[in-house]
Length: 552
Image (cartoon, rainbow, N blue to C red; front, side):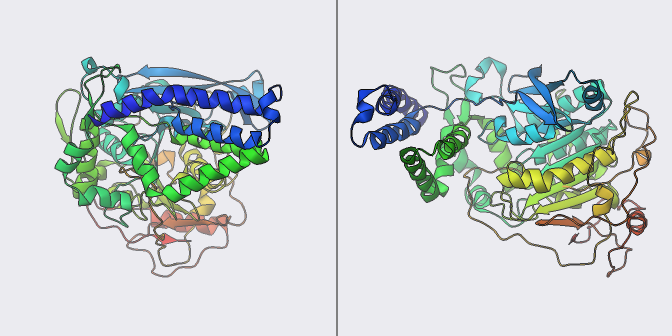
């Protein structure tokens, strides 16, 4: 009944919200006599705040009409490439009438961004997409609100999520030969499962995997989100947070974890912060600070827009990822679309480079949870694995905002470009676009104790998955499983001196068992290359415990 009560309350609030909006404009419009009354600005601000607290929030648009590529405006056409019952594969097609820019765009890497299905829409990654479009062909998974999916479309399980990801990867491989995959938060676990299953079958796997802020191993540095999932039983979640969609929705009768419950949890975790934010918005309206007020609106238009998740998917994620730790224990079985049960074996991945990214202040996926992917992917040689801890970044900071653009993205771009195979018709070398060669970052660093991020207050009430990163694989070492024959990679001219990581960045490397316990960082790029080669000559034995990573 809770869902029906919520819908009734929302319906009753709609006319009051509309009245509040009209009253706000009436007291603020210059042509209105009421705007000349004393305290009119305060009255208008109060009505505006009331409107925003009472209105409904629909799915926002990505709204990326253009991007700037080295000073040239490139038009973006957004279209649906694959339409599935619970997800759309959305492409951001780039157009330009500048011949040089068009040639450059055609030779850039193809990236599949797997957005989280954890309460918010894929538009939460708008900044991620906009930044990536400057140097990549971008596709993204746009998950549907379960309340809009009719019961006739069937159920949606965690296995279906894994199968969707595999289908999207194969689609891009069929068009471009191969692709790169970036998973943000929750999808790190199903993406790792999808690539593992492809490797176990002998299929071509993506060139690289970049995992950002996800719960690969939720036992490490548990956050409030993790504790919620472990302190409650599976039956508690089933009996207390699962409801049927009301009759006035297309998905009437479907069992879901409602988005409004997750949103309530988000706000309940930090009520003071949200109350302060709304009060600041009220004061900005009174002062006439339109820029700050608009920034508030944009943030909460995105933050307040939530979707329902199918109950089967949500409950299976709780049990598999946060209670049984099936991925790290090696006990996770996934049902294929054909009905075959297959065991997830990350150690079978050998031809995909791995890069994991964590935020130092991430309070949703604790320190080390994403980096744990390196302990599972023992079939990937060490020099193809990299990890980045973004100093001062919280959970959202690793994929959105200034730290994403200035700290994380340059490393992700360099990682992808160093592993990209230049296409047959491309006149631009794959690595030419990187301003900061990853090889310079990959030089063996002086040993420093691993950094453990200090836990911060949690911001969410539902488990969310996160990611990590490791890089630097030579295309020449890829196996014959690749769908496109290996093409000789153009020689990358290394700088005379290895570039240090920018301020606020800690980059970790996985150390091989045979390397010296204490080493100093080489002073030249040549020494860095020699050291990196020696460190990754032999793949790790499957199942073997990986040494603790080091940071530079």
